[in-house]
Image (cartoon, rainbow, N blue to C red; front, side, top):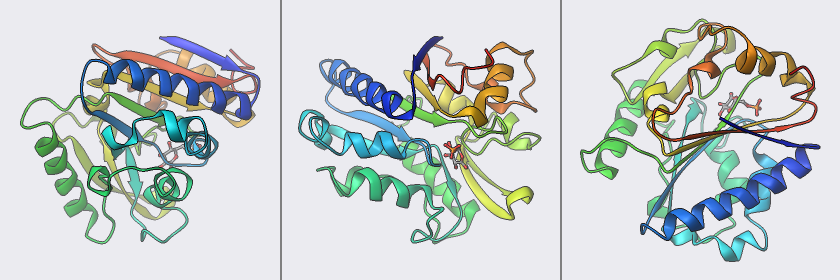
Length: 239
Ligand SMILES: O=C1O[C@H](COP(=O)(O)O)[C@@H](O)[C@H](O)[C@H]1O
């Protein structure tokens, strides 16, 4: 695991934008398309906004990128809590990505249907071979959740499905999420975590005893790929 520490959210977003651009260029020197799994929440907004501006707006070969999502809140697309909507607003509406290369988790059908459809989308994209994303961007909540793998939920232990849905009692909301095995099969996974609110949980996730039911982010350990944590000084204050 590689830990990248930057002074604050601004410096962290700038450093990760540069790192992602370099990584995309390296991968695309060897293959002709790149799969990018986006995360929702508030932390990646500044990163997405930077990627939508110069120099990345021009340097990233957007037409070769295929976008997927790690998880979704089952609220209408127009709802400000919708993860896909946030990514469109901050990034996808501002760069020349092909519409057919954007694979959202739908919320205009039932969560069960959406997860089943997403599983089909991934299987079709990877043409029956293993789902191996080039890059998965993850966030981590103050409670240690990542994707929609929340503390104490059964979905943390899902081994068969690539994507699944469940009702998250604490938020009175359905969630649709990729499962841990899919993310652990990626070529590269990067967590982005910032702020003092994440300090205690980051300490537990990185240095504490393994307890994935309490700290689901601990389950993310790519089997063959790289794992990076991009964090700011406030988040690592207790490490
Ligand atoms: O609910 C969610 O939260 C996490 C973390 O979000 P943040 O606001 O603390 O950055 C996010 O990664 C996930 O995609 C989202 O559904």
